[in-house]
Length: 168
Image (cartoon, rainbow, N blue to C red; front, side, top):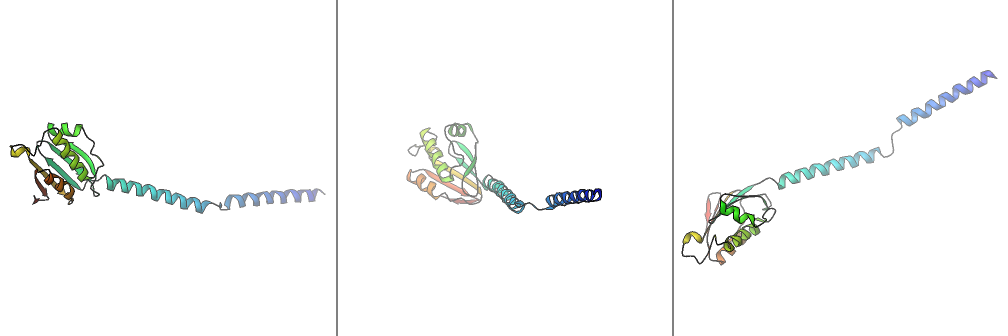
């Protein structure tokens, strides 16, 4: 009888070892699903980083001169991503408005309106300097037709220099 008991004990240890080894080496049910989800999360994070890099990278630089000088950095979707003034008049103009993340045409129209309100430009002035607006664009070409039409309707003298090509 002792022999049987010993046999039973040895067998029970073997069964316990088999059960333990099966649970250790048995692949988990959701490991494939978890790896797919982790891959998707990494792809979404990388896409978000790439999109924000593309959005905040300037592709064009615009300088507006009309008794106040303002420098605008524009991204590939014609959105203003940075604004700075080149003189004190430009600082006064920028202090009263928010231009970041606006479309370039909307931003230029807002600058024009604010300059008119603060008398930096005046279409009725006898001084030609007060009627002239110069726009210098370097980098990718920007469609400023909406802004151009509004400036011409208000009877200002507009000069747009886009990468060395002058349009009046």
